[in-house]
Length: 135
Image 1: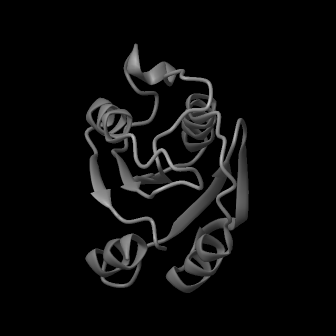
Image 2: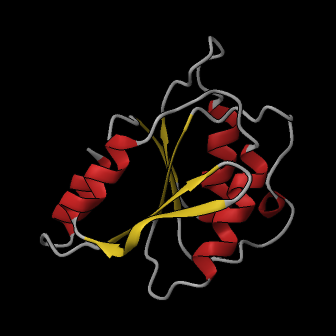
């Protein structure tokens, strides 16, 4: 739903660059995908449990700096960091001037969603937390 909402807000002309992150950022497909291609890549992702979320956010921030005209970053996550660390951008100004919208998605474990982590990330970038994560 999050991708479709963004696409509709841009009159069906939104372009998406997707990264899968663990402790590094890996580009999915090509940069600037249309809605159908982005949705296909997003729905093919599998959540596998433990995550170095702080490292992933730092890697994603570095990858996004290389892109021009980034208007929004969407992070589908349960907000759980297996190492109990926080991203570097919690302690400094974000390197990317784009809000991070956190789509709170329950993870593979029983821990649920760490909304405090996601809200901190959203607040640090001018973003928001929304329920979801189903696309």
